[in-house]
Structures are given as C-alpha cells and as structure tokens.
Image (cartoon, rainbow, N blue to C red):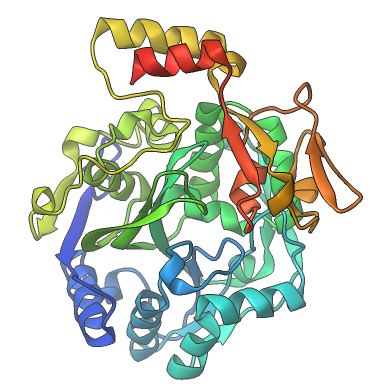
Length: 392
C-alpha cells in the first residue's frame, strides 16, 4: 500500500500486438488483476473514457492511444452496464471545436470505436470551473464538460517520451481535461517541469480518475510526444493509482520514477512510495526496454555526485542547456498552431511562415509538440552541447 493507504498494485499483462482479440483478453486480464471492473465503476454510471488524443493522428504513428485498446476498455465498461462517453480536448494549438474533434476522432480511429462498441463521442466544447481548495498549486481548474458531468473517469493513456516532462503516461494524460486554448496559460504559469508536475498532481487529485489502463504495447521513444518513433514494449498496464502506474511505466522505459515531475511531487506529498509499488501478472522485467531512446532534452543518465552537481548547473542555467526551437522554413506550412499554442507569445506567422523570438521563448516545446509537419527543429548552443556531453 501507498503511504496514505492507496492501492499501489499495478497489473502487467503481456500483449504482443494490436490484434483485437489479443488486446481484449489482455485488457480484461489486467483489469481483473487490478481488482475487477466492479471495483472501479457501477452499472448505470456515466463514465468518461479519456484516451490520449493529442490532435488526432493515424494509429500506426503511435501518437494517440491505439483504438483497439480504447475499444477493449469501452466494451468492458458497457458490458458492466455503464454509459460510456469517449472524450478529450486536443492539444493546445488546436481550437476546441466540434469540427476539430470530429477530425481528430476520425483520424485516430476513435470514431470507428464508438460505432463498433456503442460508446458516445463527446462533441460538447463547453467547460466549467471545478474548485479544488486543498490544491498546493491550483485552487480551481477549468475542466471540459464531459469530465464534469461524468460519474467516473477511466484514463486510457499511451506511454511516450516527452520533450518537456520526460515521459507522458497516466498523470500527464489528464491534462487533456483542460480546454484546448486554456493549456498555454498553464504552460506559462508553470515553466519548470517539476512545477508543472505539482500542478498535474493537483489536477489528478481534483478529478480523481477511478481506473488507469495504459497502452504500452508500442510506445513512442525519442522526441515525443509527437515527433518520436514507435518502439515495441509489449504490455498492457492497469491500476487505480496514477503515480503507481507511472512508476512502473518509467522503469519499463529506463527512467527513474522520481525524475518525472508528477511522481516526484506525489512522493513529496506522501501520496507515493516508489518502493511500495508492486506488480501482479507478468514480470515487468521481461518487458523493460533500458535503451528506450530518451528525448533530446533529457539530462543524461549518469549517476552519483558528479551527475547531481551537473544537474544543479543545468537547473541554474537552464536556458543555456535547453535546446532552442527554430523553424525549418521549407517544412513550415503556416498553419498557425504553434502561434496559438505558444504561452509566451514568442511565435508569429507572417507571409505563410512561422518565426520564433528566442528572447521570449521559455523552452516549453509546445510548438515542437503540436507541429505535425516536423517544421520545428531543436538545437543547442556550444555551451549547451558541452553540458549535454558531460551529462550523457
């Protein structure tokens, strides 16, 4: 058990590919090992099924939760007598509109999931303020309507590396409950990855998702959450606690759980003891990928006093170390997503091309995350390259 009595159990179940029958069996076994679907939801409840939609990409690009996993969870909930609504707010460079939701649902395969399973797709683009007076960093959150109206939230995330938060999994996925163009406000307010992690813990504690299911059949390595490469892991995870699930995820891809801002914050608040996390089902060590390629912003893997000293230098001179985004003009189509998402208003699209003001850039990499054309390139200066080499 966790320090506050939470269940730190995470089910790990082998799943070799996205064959629907294989995924369905793996999801059912994982949820059963985690306590059974009846532990998390009751018949008659309206459940928001929250996948990783980002801005909607084809399933084989590994950007979104795979539709076969979403379908398997939807079927399980519907069989239990729940009313299932599939919903998310796309990435912050995307206007939260019905037209954009329809496009994203179609491209990601979620529209087909709804038709197949009987789940309902959310097109309501309203939101409401949800108070959270006990929050450490946030006392209230703007939350999309389907989450506010749901009796329970079930998160179906995708494991990916992340240019800024290092990893995106269970805790980070809930950021999709923030309406699209509200997200840059949070990025501007919480410019440090660990401050952002503290906010994510507040968000998860505020909305209290009941069940976490993770698509780790194929994850994304490298410069995720959109510009990385698919990498097979071969498992489905399930559990009730976001921080415990993310602890197992981080270890699967060769990261220390406490270097992830949200898990570090959960541990600091007494919500998580990484050593208390236990797994059931298949042995996670059989699926661990220690050479999972880290994002180019990652501060190396050396341990000991030397690394701690160098990391202190990196934190003190973060702008020197952090890669700088720049525009690859031939690839830029002038869509304006990066301009809309930039929390520091450092990007302007003129004459069909984006330009970035380096003096205003806060290195949050939202522009890199949202660009589907891979027109945002990252590079370090000479001092930054030296620090990266020393930390590597």
